[in-house]
Length: 129
Image (cartoon, rainbow, N blue to C red; front, side, top):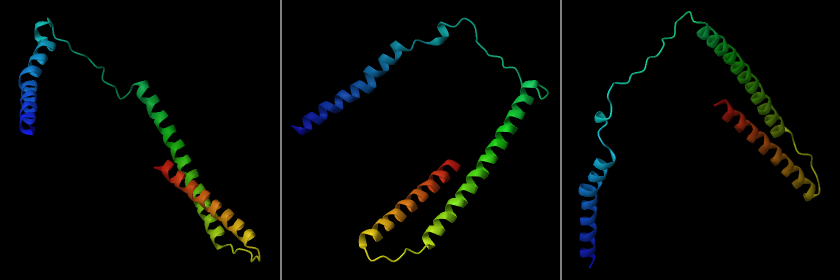
């Protein structure tokens, strides 16, 4: 039974790919050479070195490059500030407490602050890339 089903499926696939599909392609894609009576071409204007458009684009490019460099410097400064804040928070000793609830609150506060700073650093690094 499985052999018969496999053979029938194989025959249907062979018929589809070797007989039916090529006929459909021939019907739907008539040759283009019969319909074209003349050749089509496009002409592009070369960009001259002395053109005002080129000079304007160069100045815009330079302005964008300066803006990008300034933003990059600002982000690097912000990253170093966040890194120093992380180091300061990591080095700050926790005040000794007798109550566990107070100690766990400060620990969770410190952990959340560190998590926020690490997330901000990762966001900045991702935006730099």
